[in-house]
Length: 430
Picture 1: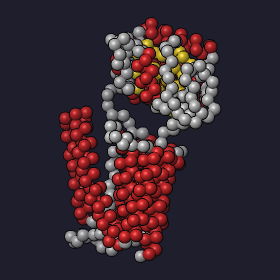
Picture 2: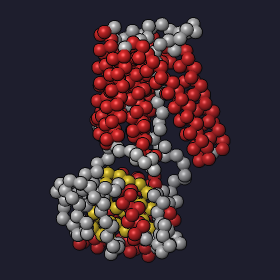
Picture 3: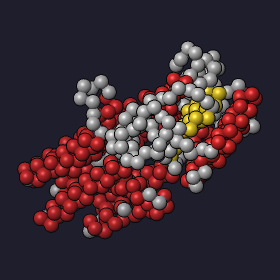
Picture 4: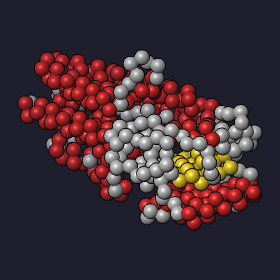
């Protein structure tokens, strides 16, 4: 038993470290580079602290405050845009700047769109191509009147297929010319916009779902077998390791190991040990299946919000029950162990709250989401090992209850004189 407890504590420390690494990987950078390139922007960013960058007055269809584009490239882009305006009357503007400062690329694009009032007020036919050079971020912001012609999926495709490869080669002029060409093809009708249907799953999405399924299977098998924990950890880490190799991104592996894999493993382990957990998980799966079927009948848009709230509420109740079971088991074994686990949870939550400060006045509830998710996940995994360690290995198929706990995972979704933007478009980086 002492060796098992030491192993559980080591696993908890390892998981906390992965959480910290994943939080650092997912945190959006807010600092501006120390050596900013000279520009003619009115506001000069401080070398260490992000500031609010002012939106300059509208002066040209191609505005480059970084000095990256040559005079010939600027003239060629301007001619492209003029020809496009003559054919479609749409107002396309290219804006390159060093950084968006404290604003995200989406927030700054909205500010630029609102100040410059791109497009006609009635047609809402403005398009902004925004490039933040030092941030290595770009966005195509589309006016409300053109969201059906230039949908988000095609804006994202232009960024990924036309702009990003050229930007990586420092061919900014070529990337912008290609983007304007493809936008023009959409506006002229040379390329038909796809039907409004759900987009495909991204590579990270496939890795996420594969990690969930793999973690659940390994957890269910581990509940029936006597594998040693080092062997189990190695098997569980197989899918995240493959994702790192295929996607060439170590941060994705850390995210998968810190969130979906442990939770899916815990759910599978609990289903393998406890009939009660199997019934609860099966009931939730059945409810999800029924709701998805209803969504196909009545329409996903009308049913989507209700589905998310119902699913979130059901899984939330299950998680609260599992957390309470784990805390009770840890407290019964040792008050010191209970205090150590609680302190570990507090450290993880404190770190996430420090990186993403919540609004203490509760005026912005979304600011509490990172801290709330960190608290729930830390409590779930931190006390799950306590519940699993106290299990006697008995299967309760005969109706008896087991002392092991489990967990489950959840994914927890202008102007009167010019055009407006409702946030449509797509962003990217290179």
